[in-house]
Image (cartoon, rainbow, N blue to C red; front, side, top):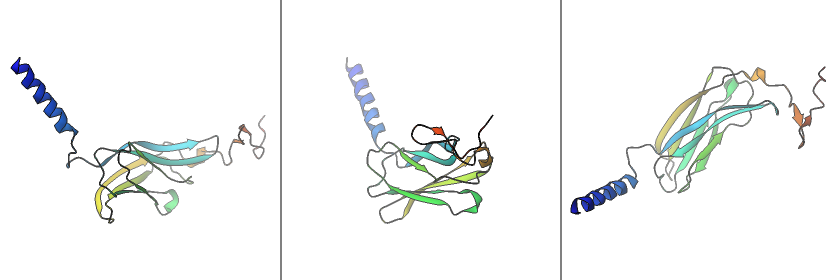
Length: 155
């Protein structure tokens, strides 16, 4: 009986120890992402979801820089860290000039309340298709998805 009780206490102690933050683990991890080509609306963008792995410091900010096509300056956005938030989503505005197979770098930084960099994570995204595969104008318009009258009539 005592052996079972000691085993239970040991298991409970290990479980509670695993609940604490590990200062060696990263603050955030990339949890998916990539390019989205919406052929219906003739729009393309890319982005990703970041998931907290451990508690972010109070007052922390997540800053993301996303490479843009055609040599445009990177798209930089920030979001305040919120205790208990399960994920953060970041994306570019609509893009033009996306090249198939080209690396587009995403840099995610965790900054403290004073702006000091606490952590930096990088990942590249590639598109499987060129921007040229999108129609030049949306295929449909309006809330009922009516055919775009600006498109040439097909046979």
